[in-house]
Image (cartoon, helix red, strand yellow):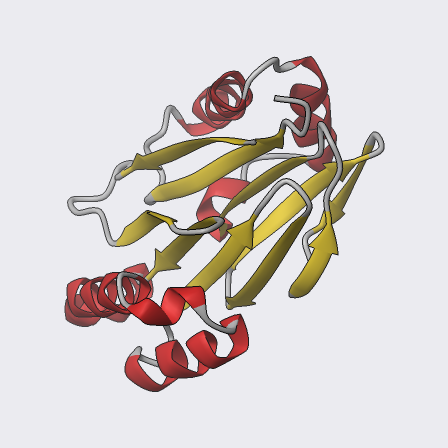
Length: 182
């Protein structure tokens, strides 16, 4: 089982120009987009991204899906699409949306491609703005103390709030915990 928790917040901005979209298919798929740097085209790009993720293409090859997304979104749009199960995570990203994985007590950047997962592996994915006020040591420590993906996210949000009272830019993120025994 994959336990996950989504977080979105417009921060100090007038509008929310990002998106986190879960798609339940054979595995869990998640798409995160940041289009805040697109000006008036941001809403259009978020809509297109959501439409592509909602199509049958989400069940196919992620490289092919990425090609379709790249063809339809503005060059400045940044995104990550991942598919996760108890055994593996497959991800593809462009720009300042990325993930970090806590595996065997170490924090690593989640690579593009496929990575094997084990029980209690923990993953956080988000935008540059989300990660900008979080030190790797804090992400690792919070993941080790949290008993759920929601609790882990709450720890991370509290750290960001301590720095800027959540008054920065848009925040979009998702935390995952692999629960193979459940």
